[in-house]
Length: 365
Image (cartoon, rainbow, N blue to C red):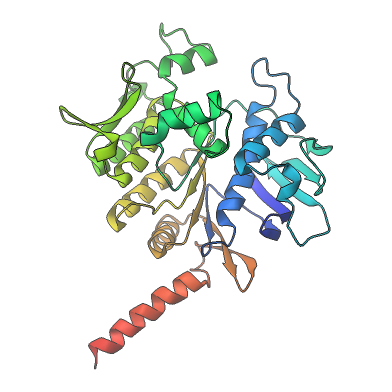
């Protein structure tokens, strides 16, 4: 898991130091504060660590990282990521299982990162970024735009997610060397009772989380190989993605990634605005599921400006005595806190309290 991260002169993030990270981590900030930028910076680093030395990939970590930064942030050159008014270099450093991964470059850098340090053992797990916008109805366009046309528009967070959703359990078995003849292959029926693994894909908690997700949305999604399109299936009926609610699509994506074996107990999931297109009850249930998955090893990073998300995670931290580090943007600086201790001072929370107090005042007039 990621233990800490430090950034300097990284786009809108002039200086940031986030220590003592947990299984669930929350970034709070108004629009334009850089919270999504931070998640993408972390994601680019983690995916570099996962692609490095995977299979027969001959690329160096610096080459993989440069390509990931280029296609994730889609700037003309990666040197454009350096803070505009800064004369210094961009620097990024994280501790992963207490091992360091860091790099730096200046504004003149085009696509070669000369300063990189990597002490992290190559990862076999897969991590994913869930953007605020759903991708199911655009799935085929994303793949065509990036894989065939090689054009900007859909960044790597969208491309990686489109590929992960399209990955079948059989293909994942082949990648990891399972032959489907027995054991813990992903194409086996779900484990039950004493046969269930304690943790990870196929465990009771993973299966329970999937069932809870399907209850929230009232069904699940499936891919039609003949038509090359996703559909929402409810009971015996099938609906096109264009007629399916945005919130249903968003939750269905997580359900699918848990079901096809792409995610495991060592995965890291980055979620940009988990509240997007969801009503408060669905947000609450989704975060309960995230808390269950976090207890079984998956690490989460979420960026939000929703009081519902902040308050629900605060209640989870209090009820389960779970450390949930929060990074809050206030007074033009990033402040670290822990929801296990208290709600952080933040304009989003302050405005929610102000509205509540205004409502109370009106009730007594």
